[in-house]
Amino acid sequence: MKVAVLHTELAGYTLACLDALSQRCEEVHVVYWPVQDEAPFDLSRASSCQLYPRHQVDLTPWLRDLAPDVVLMSGWADRGYVKAVRNFRRSEEVGSWSSGDPSKSRAAIALCLDNHWKGSLRQRLGARVMRWRLRPALDWAWVPGAPQLEFARRLGFSTDRIRKGYYVADVDRFRGVAVGHVAGPRNRLIYIGRYIPVKGLNALWDAFEAFAADRPEWSLHCFGTGSEWAGRRLHPQIVHHGFVQPEDLRGHLSGAAAFVMPSEREPWGVVLHEMAAAGLPLLASDAVGAAGQFVEQGINGWTFKAGQVQEIKGCMERLAERAEDAGAWADMSERSVQLASGLTPSGWAEVVYGFGSKSGGDSSS
Image (cartoon, rainbow, N blue to C red):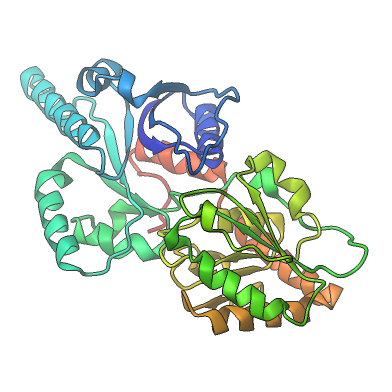
């Protein structure tokens, strides 16, 4: 099977999924956007896929000549991707008509989207346009999880044509790295993400300052960079590490108490999956799409209303109580690992392989 992937920015977890796909399929060809300055992942490691920078590819003839069995398209922000997919589908239909064989080989094309349905005027109009303009060229919708299902339905996909599990962490890279014996209490909180307004960092820092006022032994370690870096909160118990490559995070996670994700807007949040795999309890805002899948309230963590400083502080206080009891913390950690293990790169690859089969993959929807 031959697969073409029209992607946006690549990350380490994306490559893990694509490499798993390469083990399942004969050829995997990936067009990708440049790496962002705010998330400068090192993509220099060898990959079993064939990678093509976006600006080097003339997409319409490239797809036609490649003649893939499966095409994955990341959203519709790239108009060139949309145009190429429509042209490719049209060329298939013309070929089928000219050959007189309506069953002539036809690629399976999947739209991969992470948008939450909010019901705004812009979304309603956009969905109508895309349903008319793009939906006829598509066979499947692939979404991260439940928050995106309604959007896929609004685009005209029936339930049996929607798959979940589009965003998947490199589970093996992080599995259990935060677990193990720690001499003394666990009293470090971890944040990993960009330093931009929608990540909710000011609320996190305000909450931690209030929480740590009478807890001098606790610290908050923040990893990332972005437009708000210059305005980062300076506090003796808040440590800013800058951007750190995923493979270099392991030592920082060992012995940590929990991961905190305070985003005000987060379509999914693969880092939550990664930190669950690492074995950390999770504190996440209700704006994080992945929270519904990886956070069980009071079991392996807590959710809070985005931007609510007192709620964030309250979650930290509950976490601190559990962290004092090694057994209680271990129970939370174990549940995080269990929840993370349900989605893996190999399972991701099986879904793609299923798109190219008559069954269309597993029956999840």
